[in-house]
Image (cartoon, rainbow, N blue to C red):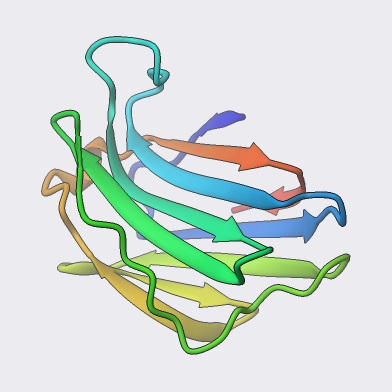
Length: 133
């Protein structure tokens, strides 16, 4: 699912419900609505990837067709099967700050420098979206 976002906002809110048979999900902030199959591929300012079996919450970015090194370190895995959760992504001058259920989880420093070009949220995986803001 690709959703256009308000380009003048500095905070993205996602109210999501994990579906028990879901093994993973991705939330990406992209610069354009292009797909992986299209050329050129859109820049990805932030890709969050939750992997339930491994209890990982990964982050990455793609600039000019090249993925950066994936970041993996987290203090704890914040998701519980069959429980709703809220992801907040705060866009600050040098970084994104990611919160789950109001708790700070990690920071991701910007690789995409043109922040106003972020215009799309792409959500993939077995999630039920209950609210975007």
